[in-house]
Length: 243
Image (cartoon, rainbow, N blue to C red; front, top):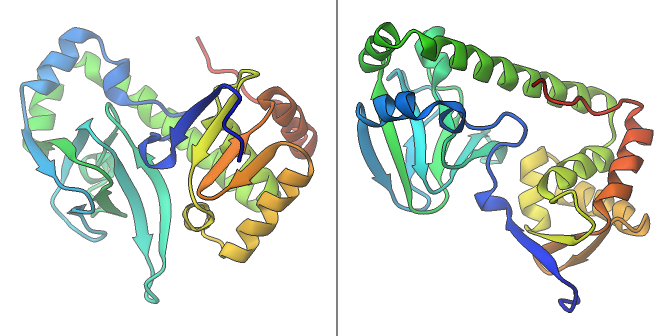
């Protein structure tokens, strides 16, 4: 793959959950300081398990630094990636509001620090700072809308179109090139498909002139043209976020 042109390099491991945004980044400084003051900072080495699916200890986990992989592993040992979280993202809301056990495994991708807030600490803070409820409702509603969009894509769209949408989210959406550092196996795990199926989807996008592929890299070309193609393929205009 040529490196002579200007490009932006993005690692899939460090890319946070798209579209939903992080709760902490949306909060005003006063609320961020309140949250920073409670809980306990726990450090995790790369590949260290933060919690497993089925764990019943409720609490809110906020990524302070590093990156977290959220996934499930089936009985055959196949790990399927659900999403990745970066600084400012949080997880564990279901354990607080729905009394559910952890629904996925959470694993540190890099050196990671997590602010672990217990259920008692969280609801005590919520009582002291009722404004936090509005931010939480907005955050959870965006997450639900994002999940509904993914489910709709899964039911309606072929793999190459779903892959194109993800690649566009990774790109800067400018006319400069963006390079995504990821193997075909990484992408296959992310979509829960075979490596053969992912290879075919990448080949289709390459033949259309939207990407170039190299060893462990995908160069995203002309994001504007890719976005127009996605619009034609899906038949749906992208939703603009509310002000």
